[in-house]
Length: 190
Length: 190
DNA sequence: GAAGAAATGTAATAATATTACATTGTATTC
DNA sequence: GAATACAATGTAATATTATTACATTTCTTC
Ligand SMILES: [Zn+2]
Ligand SMILES: [Zn+2]
Ligand SMILES: [Zn+2]
Ligand SMILES: [Zn+2]
Image (cartoon, rainbow over all chains, first blue to last red):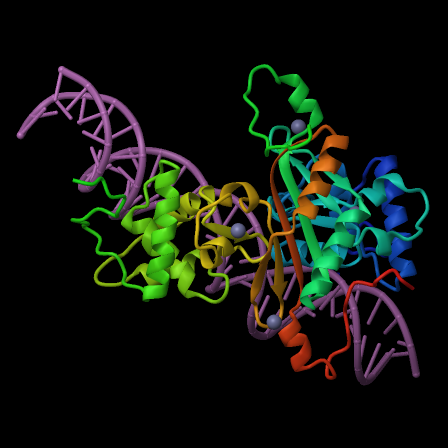
């Protein structure tokens, strides 16, 4: 036959294999999608898996490179479409300052699916360390409440928000606190 | 003779001419720079003037095109360097979601130079209308206070922040409120 | 299994931003 | 008013991020 030899008949694009830990997170994500009537395809699962394997934000083109294995040559739209899907379903976040992506922390830490879309989707705050590039997701509701208040004042219909803070994380600040002068925004009660 | 902080008198790159209103804002900006020991060159003044002429955020390459007059062919670094300068001195803001730039509202509305760098620099909130593309700068201090509080909890040294809200402005919401279904973030009074 | 919808493949291109190095302008010192 | 050092700009090339448009495949539903 002229057909290429495919390892499996069920999946035309054999998924990456990830650690058991990440596979578990991927299963949770899949459950969340099913719950929302969305399809977690092999492609999307691969992209999410790759994002989960990174300790730091990943760029779309990094993901693209990592997808290029075993004779597959995906193009940018492949990655961007998967990213769009994952963003829409609250599984990842885009860090605007970095043009890069991180998994939603709920995926990492919650064992049940609960109010994910309500509490987390589009409403988190991100602390970006300039030193070690780590991004921490904070789920403080006060910020959103304030923004809602502001928008109400302005009669502005709020649809999504980005709240990002750049600076130095606790770990890095401790590592070399004596070496560098502080460039902190003046804190008035510290 | 008085050491006036003007763009060089025999400038090899003749500055654009702007409306009296914008020239006035440019003069204020120049005064702010002088105050900070920075040089408002003709190039930087031109870029700021162009940004001020726009009612909406402008991209770097739009500015680049607009600078191409009277035999001048500036390249991207020219614009990006000017933008960096203007950002550093709090004269403009970068809207991360749009990769575009707007003048700091203080430049438009304050007649004296006061605590610009303290209150405005890097700490404002931006309301981005998806419909008419207008961006409104809000100077609510509560958001920053909350972020400081969060960062203190995390021992995170805060250096700069982005707070952006996308949605529909009052004007656009009124224009066609009956036509479109509301896609607002669910308000939790339910 | 045929029709329609959703997802993916593919090629090309658009939009945004940076690097590296040469040149020119400006301020300071002598 | 040169010499100098530094700041700013010019220039070419390239890097990075993202989208468009259209063909093909896969999945769902009937
Ligand atoms: Zn999240
Ligand atoms: Zn760090
Ligand atoms: Zn401002
Ligand atoms: Zn509007």
